[in-house]
Image (cartoon, rainbow, N blue to C red):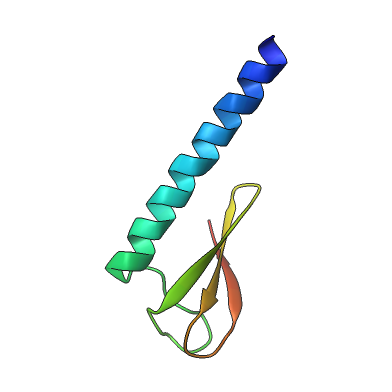
Length: 64
């Protein structure tokens, strides 16, 4: 039973992190390291890293 609760807790944390990332993207706080654009689409998480794709140059980059 504890393992299921751990998984649910981890999923909740991931969803909260994605919500924060979406808010950063909407506010223009995510900046592409290649072209400096603030236009980004969130792609998801991999561990504690958040991956985005620049709408201007197409570069995939991560944000911690």
